[in-house]
Amino acid sequence: MGVRLEEYAPGRWRVAKSRWPISSSSLPCPAVISDTMPPTEQVDGKFYESKSAFRAVGRSLGLIEIGNEKIAPKRRSTDDRAIKAARRKSLRKAVEQLKSR
Image (cartoon, rainbow, N blue to C red; front, side, top):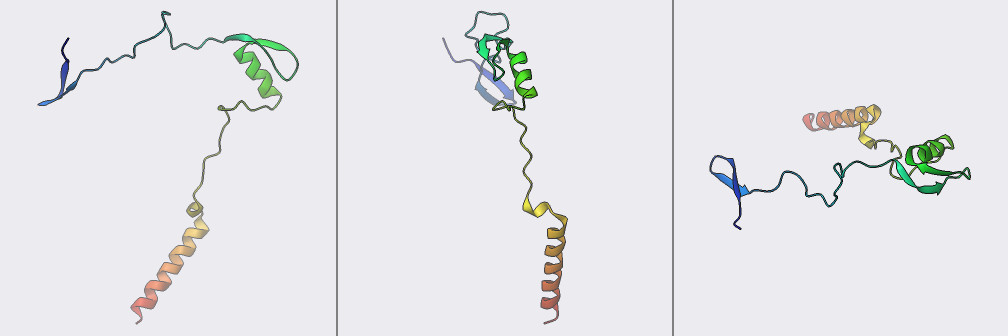
């Protein structure tokens, strides 16, 4: 079996690869995640077989599921307007001092 090539631009070739990943599952939709899980105890002492119910109880009790928490976006220290204004003022002063020499 030879290597199959495909032309992706005029005069440019590459090895043809499958467009879809090969599935190791015999299920018709292997990428669908089920809502069922083995019975698991939540902090309230009850057992849950549904992931959505388990998560809903955790959220109502104020728990954070690791990997699903909302992380506040990072801000640069230079985003502050006062810092930018002070920098501009300092640069203007330095330029004026150079021009006055």
